[in-house]
Amino acid sequence: MGLYFEDIEVDSSFETAHRTVTEADIVGFCGISGDFNQLHTDEEYCRKTPYGGRIAHGPLVLSMAMGLMNRTGFSDGTALGFLAIEDWRFLAPVKIGDTIGVTFHVVEKRPSSKGGRGVVKRRVEVRNQRGEKVQEGTTVTMVRSRDGANE
Image (cartoon, rainbow, N blue to C red; front, top):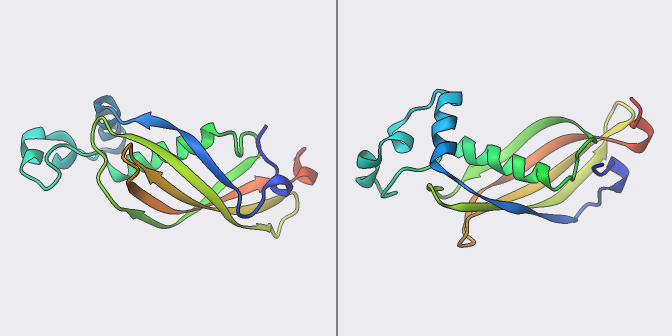
């Protein structure tokens, strides 16, 4: 079971497992999103770009980061909804074969105007295998409180 609102401490930090981005991930995301931009699909074209090869979609890496955060169990069974992504930035390309991991820090929490839940803000950093920050931003999530556990 994930953390209830009351159990979450501001300034606490968490680190996720890591995940390697594969060609299958990019091809699958092209199909799901409908984004077949040459930056993701055409190796010859991309060799002539500053990236030197195909890159992953920014939203694909964001989705992977959210999945890695979920694997920590932080809000497994206690999350009630994803409310917002604030000030998200795409800082560096992620290529096929790169391995990403996530660190997140609880920066704020407040009770919801409705009982039985609270709002938690987490500052998120996604880094590649070289420790380079590739994405960052803040996520806002609604989490159950103990008195709302049976709702």
